[in-house]
Amino acid sequence: MLRHHPESADITLDEEGFTDLPPLLKILNEKYKNIKVGEITKNTIEEIIRQSDKRRYEILGKKIRALYGHSFAAKIVKQETTEVPPILYHGTTL
Image (cartoon, rainbow, N blue to C red; front, side, top):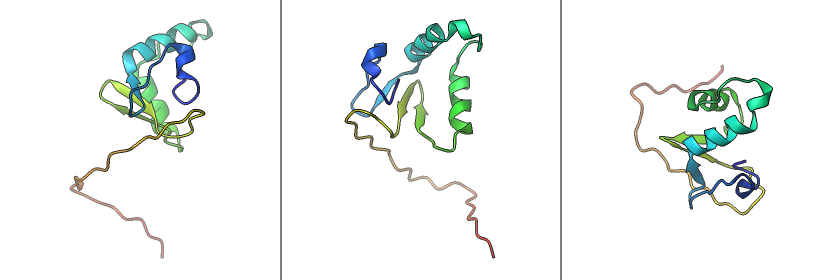
């Protein structure tokens, strides 16, 4: 829905490609209510994102967006972080 024709599900994306997560969860729960997957929550979506090696989606607060793979014109600008974590690992094999 976020990557292909969001308007067909009454989803509006802002200029950065975000939409509000609570209305999207309502749409998803309504759409999939008959397949008995249980309630789809923010935690459900976060787990799906974590398990995916493609990292197509991003949640910031109460907003979600697709980062790439859109079938419509979209330019997603991802903000760079300037914070360095207290421990930084670099993987190298010898």
